[in-house]
Image (cartoon, rainbow, N blue to C red; front, side, top):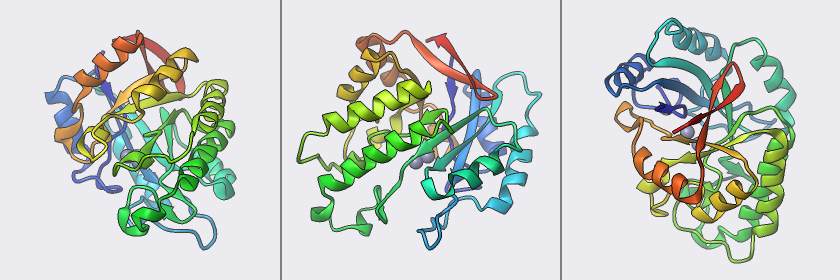
Length: 261
Ligand SMILES: [Zn+2]
Ligand SMILES: [Zn+2]
């Protein structure tokens, strides 16, 4: 079973349109492919990512993905990668209810006005452990909201090679317990291999904790170009098998099913 759910089109910061992503998924003989463009309802005076999909484009986005609903292979899934914002969560839930989403990926790119992935938004020396702690607290909070299905790139702050200066174990433990309690899955995001951290999100250490807690996982590419739809999936599968995972989580209309891989 080969599927890839975390992929971006020109509706947010991807390089190609939905049609080209589907075309490449057919070429690659995928069983399922999902589109999950960035969606973010900022809080009042909050930071706005210019590349995120605007609310008024959501209708057209959904229509463009659902155009493929009768395609037999790959099955095309309707998703979103959502920036978790506590202050606008209720507004988000009200909007989302109107559409037949297959899954919602929740991610955190912003912590205390710092863009976690953008070194220009902070002086590297100031990228302190405080931000990493705050990051895990937000992950716990988003899991507790029970409004999402999948956590995106769970230890994203390591992207540019930053390492925590203090033990984060307790924060990670609390966040994973909330994820388990919410029945959410954690994605193994292979895009990390292509950045200075040179490994998947999450780390092997965190993946072992995820296995211990019997939290479900799936493999995603976070592709911004169709050629990346399944990059390093083989490597990710090997890593998961070595840790002892036997199943991956797939989604249909926000219902989870575990399948062998
Ligand atoms: Zn992301
Ligand atoms: Zn993404």
